[in-house]
Length: 367
Image (tube, rainbow, N blue to C red; front, side, top):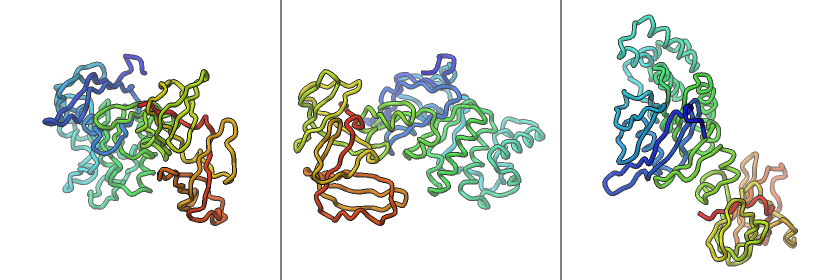
């Protein structure tokens, strides 16, 4: 965690109710100054509610909000060192780019010459030098989003809030804007808090991220840690393409290995920091790129897990190829491999196959 004097945002016991619906449930969170922090989770999970609480657009039912150590829970948006970038571009259609970006500065009665200088500098920052006289309808979606970003950053706030800022862009432009957002954040050096349900977007920009679902903060950490070592089953299912198996614990050995009965076979997984008891219900996840199709008569070697099933489908995706395998309980398992250019592996639909992975590649989930 960041040192106390480096904390840009701290929320304590933050809750928000809408009638009988608890949209946010006692969230505790700290975000370091100068971080690009992402709130990641499914739609309706509470991400935007938390962002709007930080920005002052709604009031909390309970809890406290601190921005750079100042308690701001009941201050309006214009009393906080924040600005919001919305999913919709929210530009004034009758104003050109220069006027849109300088709008907030004019409300502060800043001299015209200074407004012009700051707006020009910000347009250069976001890659829109020479676009000042254009109207919003003359811009692409990506350019309109850059204008909105410039309009927020020109106010020189300490914290920028971004609510699904790339959702309206196509996939190619979204990837480009992810890289551009990260570049701009590193250049201006302020705290960015970015809400998204898109895991690729989150992992591209985030220094640190939190998983929000059902109004709860499930876990937080570096993108790579959450991808490779998820604690919660939900995180394993939401980030990446993980295969998840449910069962109950039959034994735990002295080296931390947990034996799990799936009902049709048994698997072993290392418990790491989680040590369930015999009889406990647990889940095991393994990433699809760590699973392999093996010879149908293969026997499990030391440190390997093997499951039998039937081949259902091969899906060619260019760089990778996905194999779908149906297990005895009807569950479908995904095997993702680099495409080898051969045009297929020769496996037929409903052919018996086996899949395997290293025991150390499995992850145990007890929550």
